[in-house]
Amino acid sequence: MKENLEQSLKAMLVHEGGYANHPQDPGGRTNLGVTQRVWEEWKGSPSDEDEMRSLTVEQVTPLYKKRFWDAARCDDLPGGVDYVVFDFAVNAGVGRSAITLQTICGVARDGAIGPITLEAVKQYEPKTLIEKFSDHREFFYKQLSTYPVFGKGWIRRVNEAKELALQMV
Image (cartoon, rainbow, N blue to C red; front, side):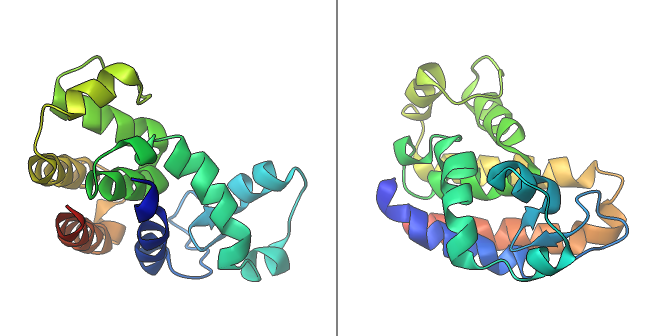
């Protein structure tokens, strides 16, 4: 839902936090959830550590809207479902988030939310989708080799995202 973008972005940024460059995180330099690679692609030029450290919410908001919210068709999803799909898209990629939704809805898993997926979503209660999506998300994280390092935070994020999403229904 269009009206949920601001609330969803704010909640997602709580989990993404500020600047990080964890040696076991393949994303490398990251600030406000934006990796240096993604930031450089977005702006079309190289960046350095100082620039990455100085990113602001105002700078990254257009990137999040276009590359994640719009790419995952969140304006077309029911309230609450939009947030969990967006949050997972940011954390694991738009394709992974779309495939998760498509798996739950029983449609072809092509990694892009289109008319068939959107029609299938309408067949489910939003609360049911949020619950199932969160379960699938938790299962995905538990399969990752970096789960022992980042798992506790990922599971907390899944639970907090699910809680907020259920309030948005």
